Image (cartoon, rainbow, N blue to C red; front, top):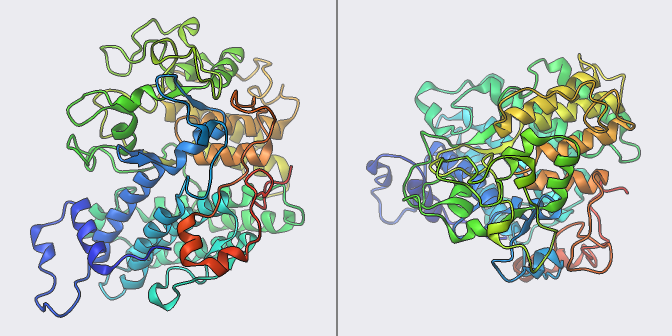
Length: 511
């Protein structure tokens, strides 16, 4: 793993935040390394998390591969087909999100290690929550990972790998610690600006911690022998009493942070949308909504979400966020996954206004939706009916669809209750757990590719068509440890055994 120097951390932190010029005057002794105040590091770490997930004009973010492999996005034929993504022809030199994640994790560990010294204890809880979010994603991408021996700098240059199941269990404990830290240390009003997610709201951070616990617990819901543990932990969350994220999403940045300046745009807007002057990025022609997703939405009369997930053929028109052609179902055309000809940018549906609209460069970058939270609660209540959650599985399910509408910017309310549509009308759905999984898949569209891919691997819902580029039904189940880690931590990587990205599954991927 790469280890940041303190100097680099201080410089990057300064460039990524709106701090005073005097910040660099932190050390007058040229023989002593400079350091950085945790609040500056925390702000920059949050921004880095968003960029690592979304990507920017400089490269692909980790959530992007999830959009492809969950069957939601593919590419137009304005580019040579990417065989790494659509023919699954990749090596340990591709999809290296590992190094950037551990770099970012070192930021959060720096905050935790130095918060007491700088009298900024209020940052310890949020930093632990963000650490947990990243470790959860690393497990879901790579399986066993350095955890207990990681983030120790020169004290552990070749960290051992922990069993992925043990990491999942420990993450719940770390979130308990984070909640205790948050309750004991209210955010100081002078430092709320360093929190570009909740603006210093400890209450919302605790709700986020509980919501992340539900993701971690429900991700394991099919693992044999976990039922009693999951039920017990869900009941502990309920007894804690703070509740879960609802009515809003967990998002980084916003109008007070992202600016119409090169390098300061919302990262996904910067990569797939427009530059700081409003010029359309060339890469705007690359991602296309898959034929499978568009056909599913049309078949289920889910046209309101369709018009937010995709633009009609011809892309965004002169009015920001509005398609150039009439927004009727017939004008939405998806691209078969992996197709290498016949689907040009001009005759296919681009990523829609729920993610990209010209001029909307300061939109917060979502890292968890309230829709996901509600649907995880629905799954918990449906699968473990005796948990102490106060509402019914149906109530949570219907709330999840409503939250999805809100997050996508749909004007109107869902009208699926009583419709008889399988996987939409809870009462009419033949398999309630499958319906919940299906709605999670839709709710993640354009908003969280990593979670969409994880949920598809876990549930097998929906059944995705195979890529045009392959002749069998094999699909990736994970990523490979990167060559950089093999070079610096060879013995511990080798100890993980032979990794086959078609057959070596993450522990919660049972089917």
